[in-house]
Image (cartoon, rainbow, N blue to C red; front, top):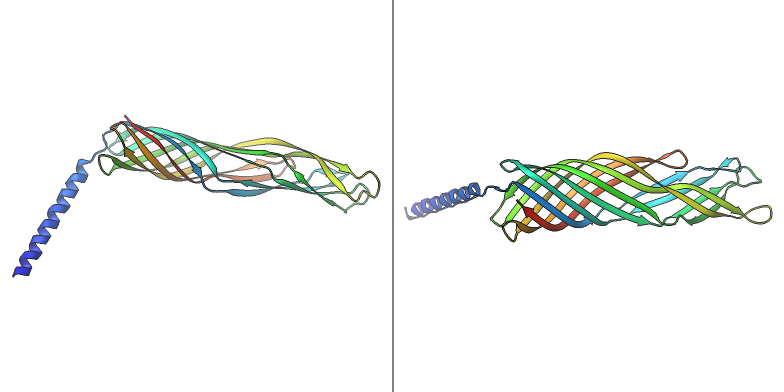
Length: 254
């Protein structure tokens, strides 16, 4: 009998606690009308791709290969939006990522005397630049956990402009006397190619409000897009953008 009474009391206490928790959760409504997020962060994913061109030299196609590597690096991101209904908001953001590389170009250069007898040559391309500029349109669902902490989930399309330096041409220098067994790549010229693409972004954000209007936050998200860029030889290279991104910075509520 005593055990039954204790069990009933515990169940009643648990029921009251659950009711209180539910009531408290129902009381925590998102009352803001707009928000702004400013982040400095990291695009953590590195990517590699290979550029191949076949310029005509001495009436024969050479083979020129440039291995590209886009490393992880700093990301700048700013976004803002307005609440539409209950915890649902719509917003737009802007992000930019840039990187530099100095790859080694490898060439198979035709002989001026013997057809089908290419000679190997390597050189540096010099500094090549890569950049990703994106506008992110997102729907956001805000969940106030307490008076100080808010969690948000967001998703939507991203509109990327991807820019990449690629090879545009080479000049070669022969050894001074026949049979021209050695060749060097005397100079390299490059150009910047760009293309636009539509991708997607999903992520989550946590805000700690220091005051009623201002706070600090952390962002975790995944964004992706891909473009095909034209090379000097008339071919294409596929360049991916985005990846896993993290950031932290200022949060403002209105």
